[in-house]
Image (cartoon, rainbow, N blue to C red; front, side, top):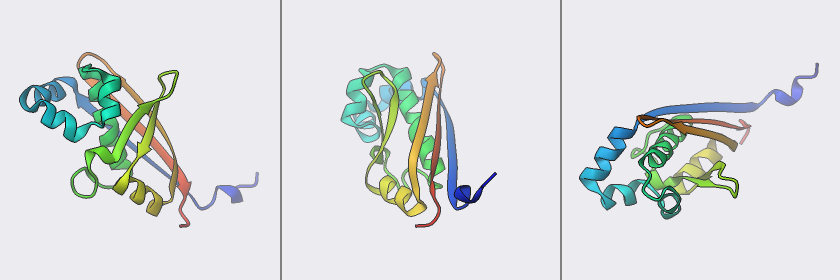
Length: 134
């Protein structure tokens, strides 16, 4: 088997588990201030106030930051990471500003994301791949 085409590839993952009650408490305490700081307009429109959906997007944002090897606030802002949905409802990742720059610097070109939730927990999982030769 020829493995030469696999040499020089980068792979990174990130995962986050968020408590729905925590997101709900932040929304109750800070309202639009929290909502507008963390979620883009498209995310807010799509979620339409559904706390579990917002918690899933929160988890994805944390998971992406972990995959990029940094935290939110240190290098990235919450809105640098956006979860949009295609016509069938499949979540997709859009990186902006510092997140896009950092992904480019790391050679990360393709992202796969998955999110799910129950009434109490939301999970976000991301896999990023690309060339480690920038």
